[in-house]
Length: 143
Image 1 (spheres, rainbow, N blue to C red):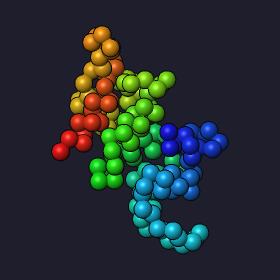
Image 2 (cartoon, rainbow, N blue to C red):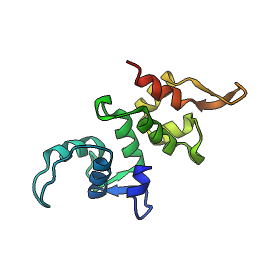
Image 3 (cartoon, rainbow, N blue to C red):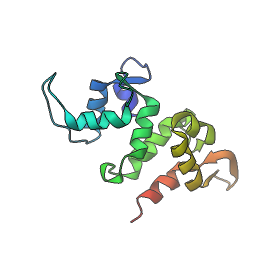
Image 4 (cartoon, rainbow, N blue to C red):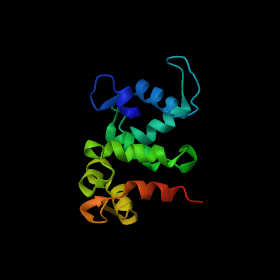
């Protein structure tokens, strides 16, 4: 949702300034620096999220970054759930194997699939290739 909010041109990409604004709105405490001044904290984040420095952060790069962030920077399971919800087409309460592999690195998708339970519909039936991201994200926050 945050990504879509800051993606004003609906291009599926955020420039670095839009990405920085997005991070700030998510509660990241990034220092205010004058344009052209060094910003080592933000540069370190860009090393992770945009290592090829193409000047943009794609939705896939953003999702991978949000999922891989240490939990100390994530305030709630709802933030992670929102990230998975953005991956799932039509705002479904589950994510498919295909959606995971399309939007995450192979390692991240493999991790999610090995830790996510199959999604059960309201009648308790398992949906093929559907995984329960809500239960998965909440399990990450159990102390």
